[in-house]
Image (cartoon, rainbow, N blue to C red; front, side, top):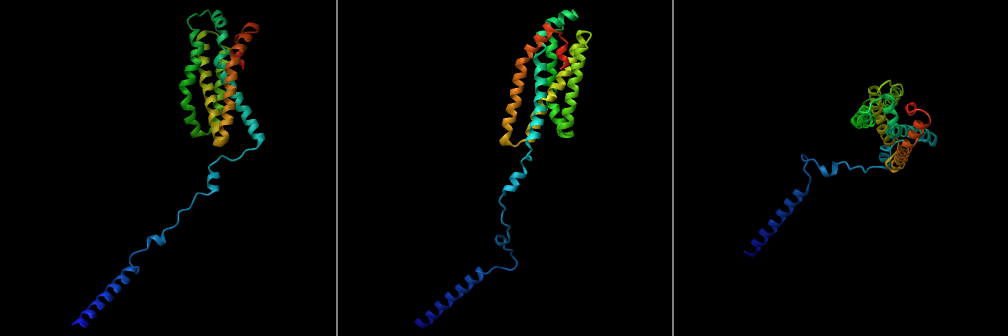
Length: 221
């Protein structure tokens, strides 16, 4: 009796071992996703460098920053240079009611058109839009310098504001496109410094032109 029980126990143990061995074997119809999965590729240094703007030579950087700073300087000057000339403008055109719009037309046009310049530069490129902004600014300056009456002067100031806005915003866009995040702050600080200097010396130059020469001469800048 005991011998029969021992044989039955041994046979049950052998059956469990065979079942466990079969379950551990891989099945042909089930793909092994762990072994076939491709390892994730870590980002390399070349991928990070590809996202940065290309390195420019010192000569290209110097000429580009010089032209951008001149654009910022003109845009800042026309914001404040006309302020000391307002009494002379009112006396020339005999229009006491329109002097408020001599400065306001520029600032309103400047603020209203600012978002448009960035959008159109994304479509047609930075350089053509920058040149268009400079051309609009020069046309507005010519209108102001040759204005025969107050209404034409206000119109010229509005056109100047349109061009000055493009010159100011396109400078920031071009600097952001040219330089990486590491160097961008330095060149934006340079353009901001030029803007501050232009805004500060604008009233002084306007007063000199008005008292020593003629009030229309600042618009020939």
